Amino acid sequence: MAVATDGLQQPQPAPGAATGTLLRVRDLTVQFPVGRGRWTTVVDGASFDVGAGESVALVGESGSGKTVSSLAVMGLTAHTGGRISAGSVEFEGRDLTALPPREWRTLRGTGMGMIFQQPIRSLNPAYTVGDQIAESVRRHLGLDRRAAMARAVEMLELVQVPRAAERVHEYPHAFSGGMCQRVMIAMVMACNPRLLIADEPTTALDVTVQETILQLLRDLQEQTGIGLLFITHDLAVVAELCRRVVVMYAGEVIEEAGAEELFYTPRHPYTAGLLASIPHPGRNRDRRLTAIEGRVPVAGEWPSGCRFRERCPHARPGLCDTTHPATTPTGDRSTARCLRTTELELQGVQQP
Image (cartoon, rainbow, N blue to C red; front, side, top):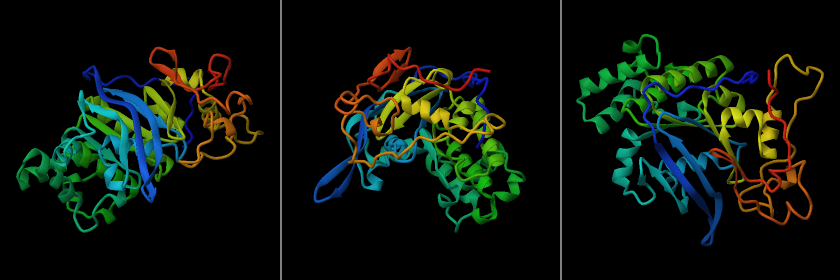
């Protein structure tokens, strides 16, 4: 999705949003089995926060650990064969890492919800969309069937599905990809959660539909004051939607900053590389698109020293290949994991 980032406009907090930390993740380490009792670390010591009413982006290439981090936050790691081996996940001050399954089921509906890529795969083709929304409402809010179906119609109207009272009785195959995503958002929002996790919800959609979904998420946040953790590899989308950005690479958080600060003055070479790869329509037409050479190393095969060093144009032999960088504060609520942070002057998006 090509979105101009010149003159970056910061999204404003939702009116009436509560203050304080909603989600607090500290030193999160997630592992998956590789056979014979051995485990491989996929997320390594990740830390980030989401405030009440705040929109935070979790960005990075595929394989960086974004989705696994979100599954850990939702308590779904064990469902995919993994485990949280260290760290903590706190929601509204409550540690979730040892939460019993029964309490998890309640929290996932009323406390937090998640929408996924390719929503058609998350909808049951054998049931109408209304029945699927109503099932969640009946389980978590205790409404009877008629009231739950009325709530389903209300939620479809909220996410701007035309003729909601009619379409509530249709099956998922009758909906386009963009409409299926609206249905998923309606299903998640039906029980009034305080945190919404969106895992690349616009990836499989065309440009026009992407913009519609982003506007819908903005409107919902303004209306409800919900906290948003938005997972994506597309920084152009982040510029439209989020106030803070957490950048992940090879299982680690390598930079965190406010969106405007990160776009204009990145402090990590990987972030600068991602920003340089954003296409700018109408500018530099005679130049090739910029790309970061190489690929994200596979979990369990991370290089010694800095994990980005093999792809980094600023790597220094004898330093970056021998010393693993720690997280360094770079400002108010801003950090970077780079040995040369204080030396480098990296290029962000150009000021208008």
